[in-house]
Image (cartoon, rainbow, N blue to C red; front, side, top):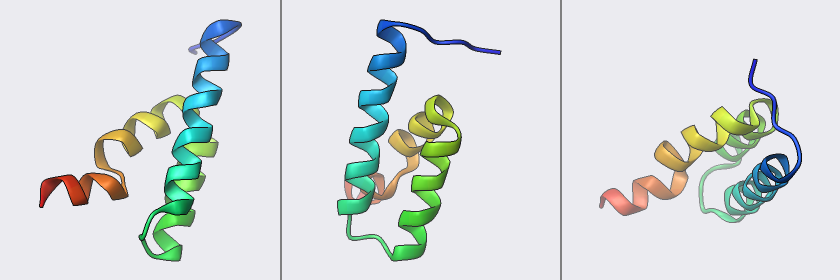
Length: 63
């Protein structure tokens, strides 16, 4: 299992907080916001990476 400590854990915390703020401030539906937020909270590193690639703002970049 991947273990983060020190600076790496702090950076991941900052990135996850940024992702959560972006998720909650997005124009996505409430249900999608809740699902994305749960993913980032439950799986911090993997959830952040998935959100970064396929999150609500990625749909805006594609158009």
